[in-house]
Image 1 (cartoon, one colour):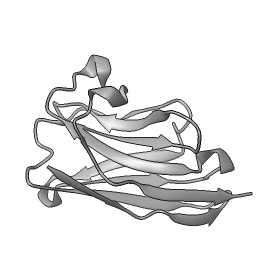
Image 2: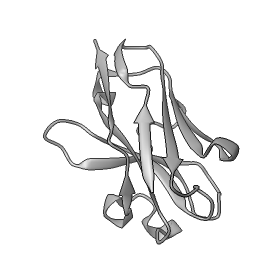
Image 3: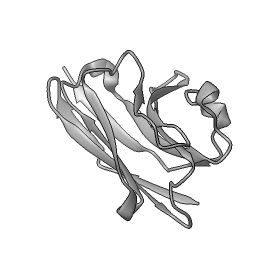
Image 4: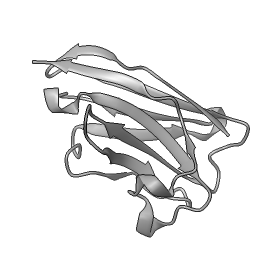
Length: 125
C-alpha cells in the first residue's frame, strides 16, 4: 500500500486547510485509516480516524469541533478539513492505515503498518 498525502502549507491562525490522502495498491476497505501529526521534538499524536468497519470518524479532543475527517471510497481518498487553525496545530501530518488495527488501538501510532510521507502544516500567529 502506498499513501500519498498532500495539502499542507502555511496559514495564519484562524485559517483553514484541507489535507488529502490517496491510497494506491489497495483500497481503504476493511482497514482502519487515520491522521496523525508530529510537531518538532514531540511524539506522533492521533488526530482522527475511521475504524476498520468504516465507523467514525473519531477525533482527538484537541481538534474536535475544528477538524473534520471524511472519505471518498470511490477515489480511495480520505480528507482532513482543518478550520480555525492555531499555532499549536503546526506539525507534519501523516495518514496511516492498517488491516490489523482494532477500535481499541485506533489512536496508537505503533499499530499502523502503512504511512504516507507526511505533509507540513505551519500556522503562524
